[in-house]
Image (cartoon, rainbow, N blue to C red):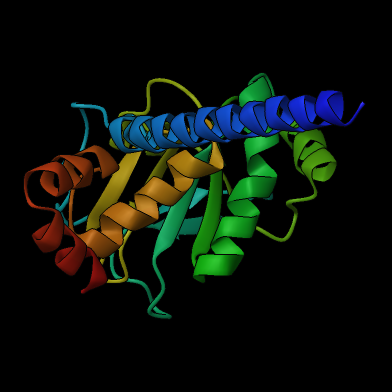
Length: 209
């Protein structure tokens, strides 16, 4: 009986050691995979105003018959996040709360933009999403100015009026990549990742600055 118990304990400890080695190996592989997979940033289009260019302040009609100024230096020293959405875009609906949270956390001026002639539909859309407190531009001209082709699309204009980042956005990670691009002075998160791979110390230092 004693010998059987001893053997079973030895077998059990062997299994524990094997499992520990397997877990360690899996954890190591996860770490390697995490290093190899680059974070996904907003898809930067090649058309439209280039990142770094100065934007011109222009007044566009809003949903309530007034005007909203987009572009140019900010009066309050904040950057401006313009997010193009549409009542027919299901991805936009889920991204709106994320944009609101990001604007609050990063102290950004948030402007929603769309186009179309069915004003009542946009009014219902604004009410449904609870974004009545935010400027809502209803202008095709604004989309043409930034050459918005697909939605949801976002552009981040710095406090100095320069276009700091832009691109197609589907997730919070995409939106956050716009802020990272502005803070790092790079066109996109992908460019930051490429610089990091070439020179990690320098890329980290530039990002910290």
